[in-house]
Image (cartoon, rainbow, N blue to C red; front, side, top):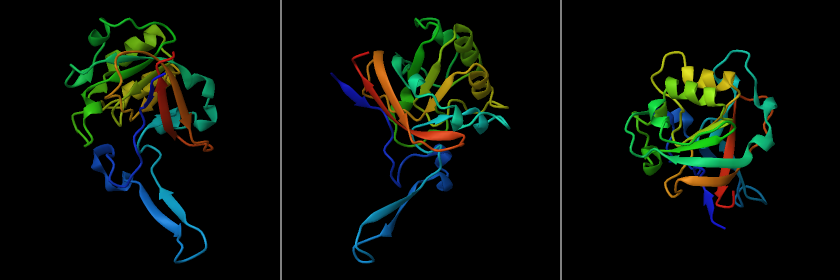
Length: 207
């Protein structure tokens, strides 16, 4: 069985959204052997840093939070679609050549997975593609960018997904994963009432 860890590594020098310093994780020491009898580290991190899932409250005032977490929807079969030929966005037309069906959980592999520095022109899921995926009835979308959309006023891709109960996972690393079907184990930290949760995401070729 082949195992792929498709999560971002949390480190202080990691890529973050728009290179914003406030999104960089900080790892400090709560205790060292010089200051105490045990060694303990302290992590300070934005919940949208690295691989994570969004909940409606991220975009919609009064939207659902991590209280809506359903692990059964995160341990599931997924299909990885190779979109590495695209330069700007995934559109509804780009979906036509792929066999996407109701209840599929789709992970989009793009040029984003091949860069470890933030690209302000990252490939994103355009509004029309999100609408088409909602019409098909997919249950989840995973992207290899730190955002599922960019430069769309009003965040329509997010809103279409949330209104259609489509899970959004951002920050995947799919460089080494061939197109195909996999079993996904996306395990979040158990944090109460937040608009996002950090994820550790594993794919196996036993789908």
